[in-house]
Length: 146
Image 1 (cartoon, helix red, strand yellow):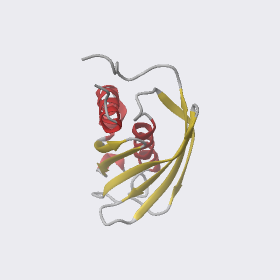
Image 2: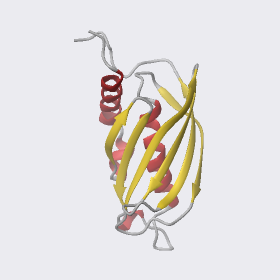
Image 3: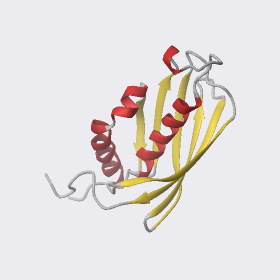
Image 4: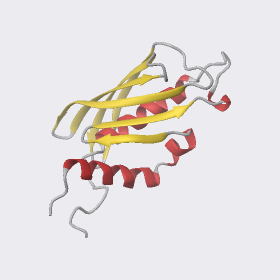
């Protein structure tokens, strides 16, 4: 019996999460995944803050990049980033719960384009991220294995 697109996305995410030490170290949680979509979140803790006493942009970027990674890897095809850009719109504050929601914009051949919105717990827009992906050889799991 063939797996559904949602099952493929979940199994791909489970395989990735098992090896994703960076997202775990960040304190992120994988909240949702589906074909071409993913949502990750994290709470801004003291060790995430910079010299301005706000969340360091690198951690916001990492959260968005991880959401992008789970979204573009949701088809059981190994996919890596080709390039990414982020625009910071508001600071993340100590104690904020930041949520990065990724969605597929386009996918054709080996290339994909994804947008990620990062918001705080009040829905305030913190950052917008765009990622370009490139599929490489390999699968996350064997779809024919029982």
